Length: 202
Image (tube, rainbow, N blue to C red):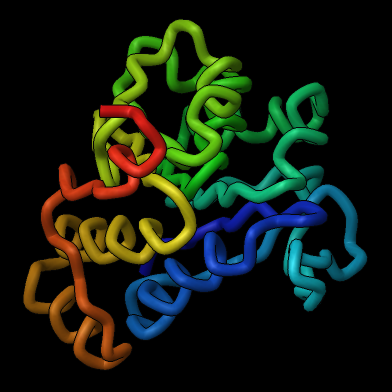
């Protein structure tokens, strides 16, 4: 079983978190999910609902996988050295580091994406990529896999990314079962990205 730490912060995007976690969470014997934050109080997402916290970034625990969501709360963390340091430390030891939407902005601000290919939310692409000048940002991609880093585009793209991760870590049969169980139309092509054109990134 792999431990999966999800970084939570105020005003995170709900589907960035719960979309991928629904995919991983169905496979209870394979993924042990932990909600991690800077403080112990329940953390409110952008839409209001709050999530209970399982562990703190100060606990000095290491996880096999990391999930960094995006959302309006991302901006407030870009100069939060405690969070950025935790992201760097987890990225050093984790088997896999994933992000959804502007979560890749936090990864780039922490310096862990330097020299890597990555993507992010296409509607916020210009802003989101401005904090990672040494990152090879991909304008058209549903998700991008480079080494141990898997970054996905905006919001719902995290579910396609999660299924791709499941297919790679386990097998495609498991990923297909999850997609069927969630009645989700899985986009398997990482280059499928109609939103890049909508936002003028082609």
